[in-house]
Image 1 (cartoon, rainbow, N blue to C red):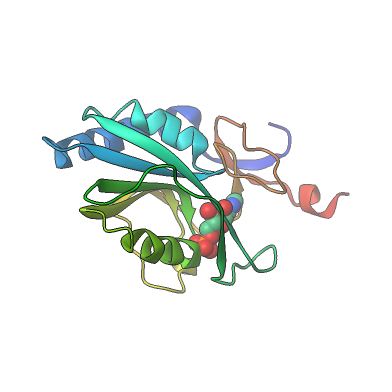
Image 2 (cartoon, helix red, strand yellow):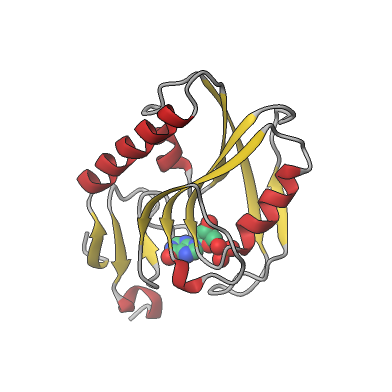
Length: 179
Ligand code: IMP
């Protein structure tokens, strides 16, 4: 990929880790039914791969949120652009996210979902940037801890581009500056 300065995670590394996460989730939810909630748009490829590695019965639903704030920093005010179709009362809910950065988006989302009275509420994120955290959020399932770099690919975008890349990498600086 000519726009990437560096590949952080290859397609094979991601696939291997998704398989491990699926096995872990399968063990933890033995005998239960899962309700998987994917957060659009970034979590779409991850969720599609993950649900096929989870071997307990599940249903899934999708939610879209937008955070207000400038391009590099979320403000913590979150708007629900698309809400769930299914209720969560009494369900074992697993929220699937692409990346946790400051944690502000997820904190809002979790408190919102908690009001819907699920039997349990856990988080599975593909990527975690703990060095940027502003609120305390610890995902129960975490694919990779990554350094404080802006990454794209496998659902993650820069200005809506690069989501389709099968790997995760860091953009070349000229992509941002347009030179
Ligand atoms: P938070 O509220 O700061 O945790 O923001 C989380 C959201 O910011 C993610 O769901 C992504 O949409 C976006 N985000 C954070 N870091 C990156 C990145 O490195 N690349 C692409 N999107 C990112």
